[in-house]
Image (tube, one colour):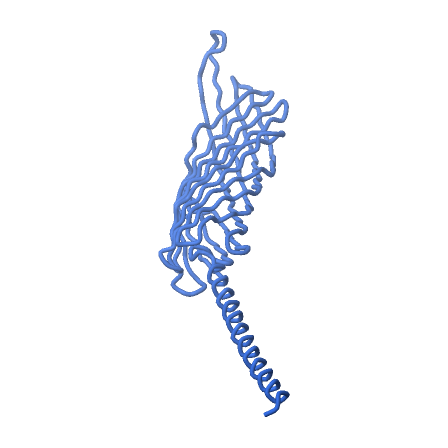
Length: 287
């Protein structure tokens, strides 16, 4: 074999060895990429306590107590704490997960009630006996909606949430009143609607026993201390949710909501307090 043939044979062997080595290197790199993607995908899975998208529709069965105070150019009045019969408020909730640890949360409910108030009092005015009697009827409505951006901390069965957003509340009342003071009769008819936006802060915790059974606790607050209409709405609840089917489930919680609204309109001031306590029940759909 001449030198040229020998050189060609060695070159061919080196080339084959180099190609084999490159193939093994590419195989290792491909495997590493696949494993890395798989590991990243596994890591990207959200906590089993969270759903990508969920919608809850149900009712808030409350035991309401409310108090209304007002000051006008005609004088002041206060109903005191009035307890009404239990009633069910419609309620809608929705949660959307953006990425794996952030998302949006929406909540809405409406309170509506009617009441009748009567009074008859005898007292002295400068040593002169006086008699006051009167009756009033009122229709009260409060709508509350909130939207918050939430950060969820944790990736296991327990996650803790912090939310910042805005709350909207609308209060409407119609009042019809008449009275007699020492034989002189008078009447009052008033209808007013107050609505405003306010900043919201929410805190939450969720624990998953498994993907289909969870418990949760949540608290939120809305506060506004500027403008003609001021006040706050605070709420807290402890609940459970269960999915007997993959995408359809039920939920229930027990909560308390406190609504306090003040209005200062110059010659007219009003304070509106409502306390709602009771369970909520929902039909839930998740995706």
